[in-house]
Length: 611
Image 1: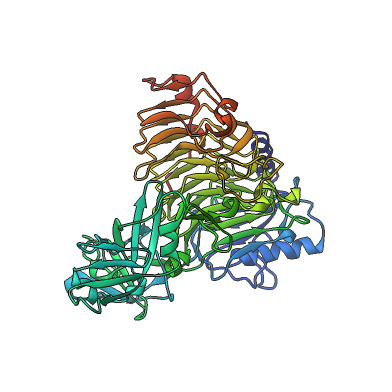
Image 2 (image 1 turned 90 degrees about the vertical axis):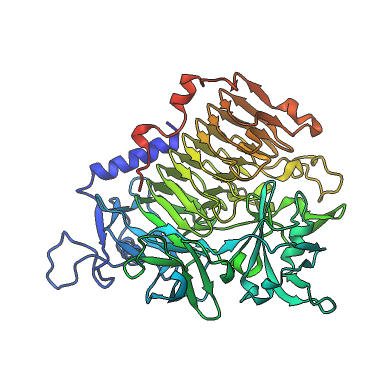
């Protein structure tokens, strides 16, 4: 077992073994933050009883620590129920535990508490055509869930005869589109090789000279960015989303934002007067936020569900996906032969709904991340020795897990404390993610050191399973293969010694192409890809893919079959293919070797429950 995993497992064991000695606070939906959170003491003055919120429990732990240094582990035991967060639950350096006395926020035995950033929708009324309406409790939202199931935003094909009009928009003779309401909220959506972009409409008007022609002007600057970005660019949309006129199938919904009204077409057996309907509202559910001088240390979150959070930016400006749901930085453009990227590929990451910054020894154990509008979990900015184990990630709009980033302070940090290192994702189940931003991946690893992604099952994704590295070689010492780059670096990036081992990755690449079960970019000395069980990926290459700049990587003991190309190299510039050592793999071998199958994926004893 990984050293950190052993340490944390021992810590949890010590906590459970010392349960009589641990300080315990209780949280329950019918609690009160004016109470003590303690149940074991005699209730002499009526102040003892469970707290009502996790922020109340956090503050109670702060008061306990202010009285005296921790001498015992601290448990915050959370009863079953839904805990609606009106603001981000933030853990700061003063919320740290110690190695011998960690602070653990965990579900009560048998409970499944949900930390929700959503708002409940009530007041449903049936209208004509089997459509129901209700007042929207928030100004804007992109997600609606009915009894825990994500509803589909009204969508359909693009107008007939659509013709591209440069970087301005489109023309069409399908004049029905002139009657569409709230056109500024409509999105044209594009699936282009490895990217999934969304561009908003600015206006739809009759042509001033030809009244049989409708002119669609797209919102700028995102449409021009999507039309001119390096790599692949958009042309005609694959489908249209968020138009009331496309609300025609069961399970679809539409938000009339100016009227603050939600429309929903229920399926057979759905009763909106009895269903729990929730829209996403809060963008960041939990943030563990330390600093280089004072990280947040030794905090664990266990058996908790993080749900119903938002990410509003795509609904405001669109989403011109570069790759893996990163966007070009308009403040740092680099023009190469008429196409645009960001200097040194320092693109902007799509954020997660749970974030760790300068977190050290923080653990997420058997948690569930679901019904989320951004990515699931970010571990970034100086975080180290964090552990994500036995967790389940599903029904997420973007990537499931993002470790590290791709900015200058990530690839060549001035302060070495900024390096993201020694973090582990193990025994997790990741599936049905990247639902709204299909260019995302299961696990993204940027410029990091000694990241371990091991014994996870990753499946049912539109694009790649695991992506490691960035930069296409340009940020490596001496630069990459392009003639026009930012200033060259003499020093290598910090990316090295990552471990991608014994994962079971299958049925990914279901909608996009030019990715794989495991995808890499850039030099990363000491990185190992070993013992992974990979199969049944539709899009190519689909197996293990060493893309531009990938160097100094060892690939061994992997079983890859029923994919277009089991092992693909696109790293021939600078002879980097020669720096990689590929040996003793099982490509297109069926049945796959038993030892690989048995060791890959989540051990049955550690499998996340279907919760």
